[in-house]
Length: 487
Image 1 (cartoon, rainbow, N blue to C red):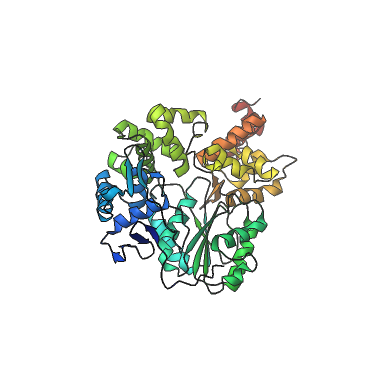
Image 2 (cartoon, rainbow, N blue to C red):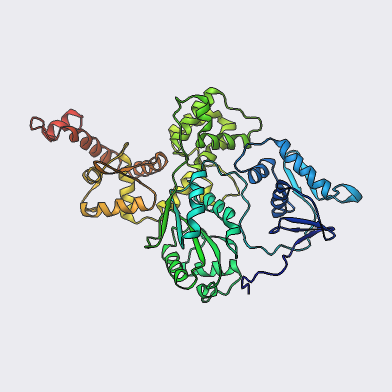
């Protein structure tokens, strides 16, 4: 059983006469340290994580220089330094293979595996446009027992919490541990999954962690809120040195929970000048992803305008932008923008290695929709007739029916907002609700398929026309109906 007692010496990965001590960032040859720079060690770590498999140049650059734009030559310089240090190619030894199409591969058999202070998966893409948020989380997470990053599906919650864990790894004596809960369907298995990851017995998990100082990252918690809530309370009582960092579309709603809402990437108006468009995080991400798939891609002025429009249509959601980027080589930037008028079907072909719910935008939204109650599903669909911000009063006037009492609607609206399916804006005139374009398009299609679009859209048009003139005694509701052509 792993008791998290730190060993006197760190076990190393061995290959030939070399040993790699990852935590110490040290490579030795026959026990003598080799003078390798930090970037070379970063590259070696990524290659060792994927030993036996090729890692593309773009993926290596994204991992080693996540916040910078660098050329391939930078990568080649450090690969060359590693090869020189390992005498790669001499006496028949070959540790790092190169394939022009597939990238680099660490080909040497590893004599042993590292005993790590973490199990964080290597990221194969950079984190763009999140510097301020990351800075805030780096300060707050170590001080909080429980931090939950919330936001709609595809906004990049997993990427953010993983990056926070990477940057805080050295802050926690017993490491940082990543547990993907998306595939866990039984709430009773949450503690068992965590215990298995940590090498502990599943019984009395919080007691075993009582003296530990570690970060637990639980990813994809929205369908296991009760179990995660119980875990957080148990750890708070028995293991105060454990910090929980969660990603979820819905918070746990505990009194000591620190909630951080993750918005889409910042957008830019297509009318802004080129240098401002290029500085826009959403545009940067889309251009980066297109460039990774289409070597030599360079956006023209016209492309940049269309890219900014695509980013607006997709709410700056990183997953949606990545799915759109996959279609640019076939349709071109303008073609992708044109196809978005036809719905979300375009965004159906992403990374084949992604989990199923991340392979299309519709699958991602299905994941949320299927976890709603029947009443919540009905409200979400009917609200899609609103094409601009709306109040709870307006929603009640349009979507209520005998089966859906007006008294239920405020609570149901709150539930949809808590689950990141609606956005809430507090303004001087009160509270207003906003749609993401992508979520509204999904809900609208659901309403059309149900055959109820015409009914609720008619009520919406009537309510919209009635609002500005309802105080005028000269115009009756029947008159409004006649004016907007509903009679």
